Amino acid sequence: MSTGLKIGTVAVEQHKVKWELLAEETIQILKEVMKEDLIDAQHIGSTAIKKICAKPIIDIVVGVSSFDKIFKHNDELAQRGIVYRREDHPGQHLYVSGELEKNIQTHYIHVVIWGQASWNNYINMRDYLNAHEDKAMEYSKLKVYLAEKFSEDRIAYTNAKSDFIEDILRSANIWKMQQQRE
Image 1 (cartoon, one colour):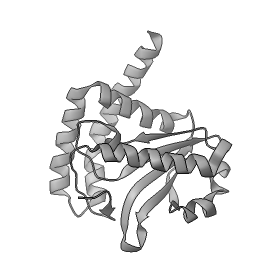
Image 2 (image 1 turned 90 degrees about the vertical axis):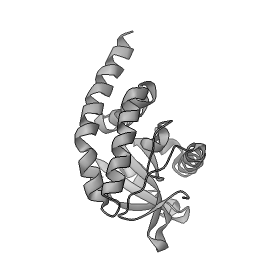
Image 3 (image 1 turned 180 degrees about the vertical axis):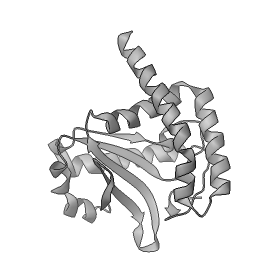
Image 4 (image 1 turned 120 degrees about the vertical axis):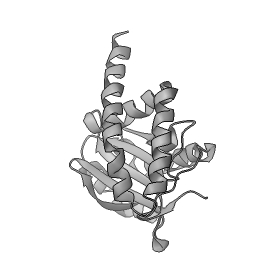
């Protein structure tokens, strides 16, 4: 399978180095367009966790000090294939890219306020799962099972993972605080 999925569908595959390269290319585009309005951008989500299965959609988090800092770049981002979708969650805006005319999405770009809970959760979960292979493998197995069960229902797939993700986020945040004390 190449990178990307049709909207609403679910499939997972083994980690690919290609995902890391695609994330870096997109982060470079974001930096070129947004310049000093972008505080930080990082590859997140399952494609950023080595050794686990993931949907072949690249997740990137962009940290800004104000959402106005990114909205003023919407036209130029769209020219580069990065299109604003909506406020995905309160205090979080979603951009997508891919073969959108074919309903294929290859990238999700989550814009949040840098340093706040959403930013920290994305970074902490990625780092925790990369540092705790046992938990990463548990998550991978869950993803494979749910992808088979809900291959045509991405909302059900996402909802079925939510309790596990909440548990991981609690563990990740405790782990991060312990690291900072050391």
